[in-house]
Image (tube, rainbow, N blue to C red; front, side, top):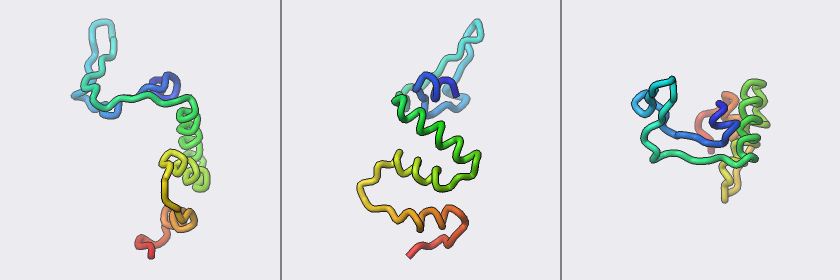
Length: 92
């Protein structure tokens, strides 16, 4: 969590085959094909998302995820929110 939220760095494929422990308990990440950095703003938005999930605040979850997506098309937020809350599985 410190690596992502504090330092803004992420390794997108951290399975056991991509992580080894070196002498002195130094963590070594392998396979750097999927890595990146988060801006300070993205880190704060991710913290907001985590807090919203814990609080079961669907409005904030939806708003934050749509902010991450930066969709170029109109999104029907009420249908998306209803479906996420256990509404109908097939939207018209």
